Image (tube, rainbow, N blue to C red):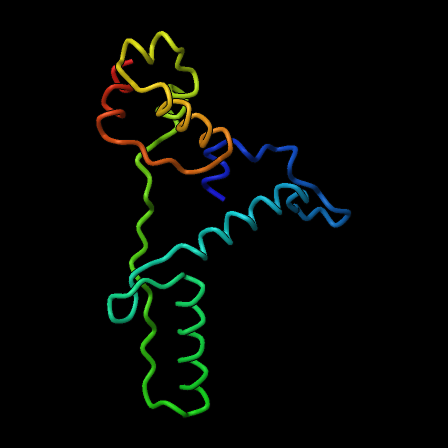
Length: 142
């Protein structure tokens, strides 16, 4: 949800007030939120034995262990949650600078045309982008 707010994908008009004065997400934003959650659940993390597993599989494994503990198939329960690191090296100011960058600025900064096109394309579609430190340092001089 925070990513969607940062990316300005959610507006006040995306919320609906029901007859009982409950606040609900509109259908389009709810779908967008579900897509983002699915994407996060399919991200892989180091888990048992140092192998990569999707968060969905990790959650399933923990629930299976819990159920085995509850029905006394296992005497111990080790709830394992991997450390989750958000891989972001961009912020709203940097995003705005990139989206507003003109071809002249790009050329003056020495940023490859296709690099800027790719970054802008991903930002416009709401994807998280990886930007090389060298490019970030060039953009921050603007």
